[in-house]
Image (tube, rainbow, N blue to C red; front, side, top):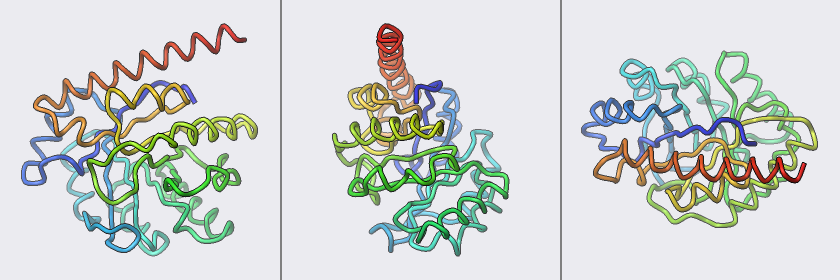
Length: 237
């Protein structure tokens, strides 16, 4: 949506035995969010962290926590993560139930004081988000199959971002559009040019010898693409 670009390093790729060290290191790159992947071993074939972990992270950093619930039963566990200190909670549209249940779940997040996000998997159509766009602070487009870090970017995510931007314009909504999966200096410009505002990067940051430098390189590449797209839009107008 071409709001100010934001970077959300994913701790899934950090060193869990030295996580506090890695988080304090990445703070020097001034990331806007810290992306927390919560996986339950059911909705996705992996198991990661729970509410006590999120609560501990809240104690050691001032970076806002972007908590991504890749779990089968978000309605049952949502309050745990709200109480733990999540600043933004994203749930998957594949897990929220019918429209009435989805609206109620999003309202619970909002009423607890957290920002509201809704995510969709690579196989899920962007059209599924249309009824909810005005209820959201963030849309998360998965550009890999959720469950594991280090996967290759799925190019179809670029068109999905562009479609969501169009849907948002049609209804006058302005959620941030976040992309998660395979983001690096080559793929970041592609999704930003399509309208993404928030980039989740894990291995491309924490897997590099200098994570701060890697973060800054992704930000620079994305900002260049965003500036070029803004200029082209201005010329067309």
